[in-house]
Length: 233
Image (cartoon, rainbow, N blue to C red; front, side, top):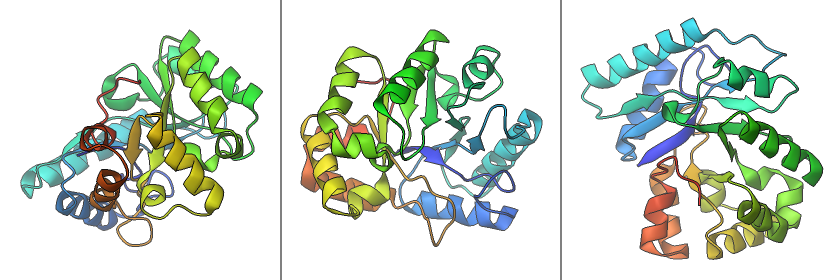
C-alpha cells in the first residue's frame, strides 16, 4: 500500500520527537504492508520556517533505516501544506515538497473553512500549475454537511480528496459516517491515508482501513484508495 500522509520524520513537527519514534513508525508501517510513504510534515508558508536541508536529511535517514533493516519501504517527499496567503508563492518557487515530486500537493484547510475559501484555495493552487489534494476532508464542516457540493466541486475542478484511515475504520458521529458513505458510493474519495503521528496514539492503521474499505466498496476501488498514484478522479 501507499500512504501519502504521514508525519513520520522526527523532530520536524508534532510527529515523533526522536529517531526511535520514527523507527517504530516505520516498523509498524512495514507490518501493515505499506511499501511507499510520503513523509508529510506540517508546513505553514509565511508563518513557520521550513528548512528543506533538514527535511531531506531526515528523509534520507528514514530511507537508510528502512534499507538497512529490510523493511521494503520507499520514502517519498511531501508535505501537509497549510493554505495561507503565501502558499501559492511557495509552490511557484519550489519551496515546499510535493507528493512524490509529482504535480499533486497535499493541502490542509481549517475546520470551519467556508465554501468560498475552499474554492479560493483550490483555484489558487491550480494557478501555480499544481493539483491540490485536500487533506482529511472529513474534518471540514462544510464538506460533512454538504457532500453534494464537495462532489460538485470535483466535477468542476481537478481536486483530490483524502480521508484518514481512522475515519474509515471508526467514523466519528452520524454526520461523518453519512458523509463518508456517500463519498464512497459516488467514488468521490481519491486516497485513504493514515495521517499517522506516532506508533501508539495515532498509528498507521492502513491494513485495518483496507479491510474496512473492501466491506464498503468494490475491491478495485478499495485498492485504488490505498494506492494513490497521483491521479485525481
